[in-house]
Image 1 (cartoon, helix red, strand yellow):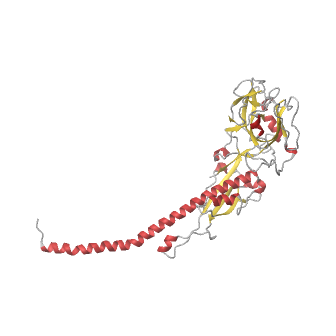
Image 2 (cartoon, helix red, strand yellow):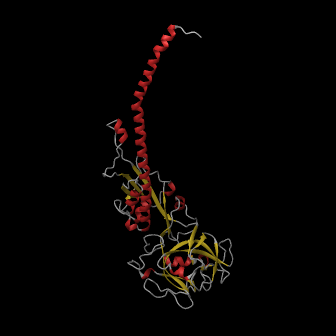
Image 3 (cartoon, rainbow, N blue to C red):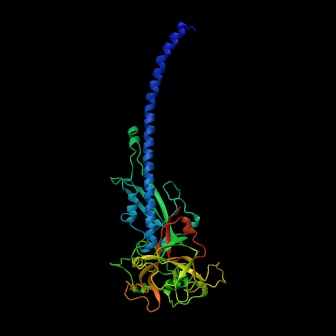
Length: 411
């Protein structure tokens, strides 16, 4: 292979030019690459702030919905202090967030008129609550909105890296919105005290007429499985108390509504534990109940607390498919099965069993005497563990709500 002198000189002359071009390209790209990196970092910071605010809004909305469901007179809760503000702050890495507003649906305002009515934004954006599902539009719900808050009290975040590249880089405010609703539920499964109560006795105790919302309840305690301040200050009244018989009930009920068995015996066939897992719609064997339904030492610890009772709508000598012709008062003695149709919350204030009678902590005195056996207290509305939105929109068909309520995110 041969090279001409002219070609060699041409190649040698062009080498420095290529090196200079590469250096110039790198120099020109540095600001672009820095700006891109700055933009990436700043956008990442904004997205992180957005996630924190959204988590805080979700927690704050859930907390606000719990307050409005349990204590309508305290709704809307404070947005500057208390649990709602705490939940919004605690979900931010710097423990700083601002709850700007709480509003409610028309159904929520029916029991809490102090709530501002939520309105749909004219042009929904990323920071607005999603459109309410049509099936949930008539449920009571609240919407909570949150806003960035820095240690200086400002509601804007500085785009620090972008500002290095461009002194006029703008600041940003990050916002979030969350919605939570509540409604009556009839759980598919629940751990219960092994004492069952008839649908008839529940209606007599609550005044339920068959029309949704007709049952009346005393005020609920502040939280699930919690007393009204037993042993301290409490708001209870003796007029709230009702006696639920497990043996010797004097009540009379129509056939379909569910009776206690002849002689009573409204206990499930277990006396080893005070919390039994049950399935809604299932049949459970009963037993004669003369003593406490579970070990006396464990049962004593339930005094002054909320317990859950299975409500039965049919009692037979053997499990069967229930029809309009079913004799729902055919069981007796140990030949007895109860059909569970739902669950009710009951605040336990006293009892009378052969082993350990307990005078009522509200007013004193035994709830029943002689050959009868009973518990005393009152049915109440109570929040149970939140389920999904579908359980609020589509509760168990045909079953009444026995006072249990759940809170869930909506949309």
